[in-house]
Length: 122
Image (cartoon, rainbow, N blue to C red; front, side, top):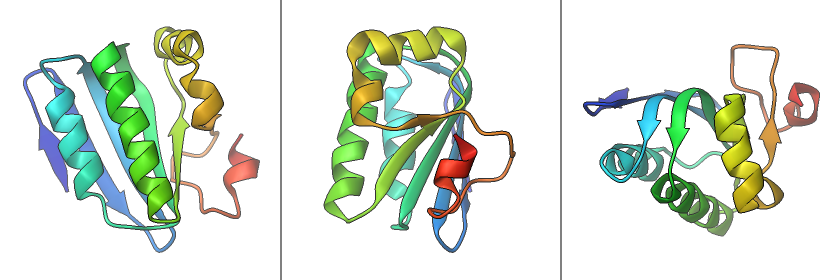
């Protein structure tokens, strides 16, 4: 399952405990709608893992979309986790303080982690 914009591609994989969202491209005001639609369309699971390793740019619009998705997932009793951000994106997460609100992990595995394995992926 996936969604594509001109500058952004989002792919969703669904597991028993984890929904993995792989994002590739630039998240800005022009493409944030694709990301937002994918995050809202993701089925409810204990963990929503957003792989940011393919994201080259994260604008304020993208930060707001991730923060809103975090609140939505928490309201359903789940947890949003950001994985493997590019150094430029990791800096945006630190500067905005979003890394204090949403866990940011660096995983060694290419598959999404289950909730029990979340600590092992860090």
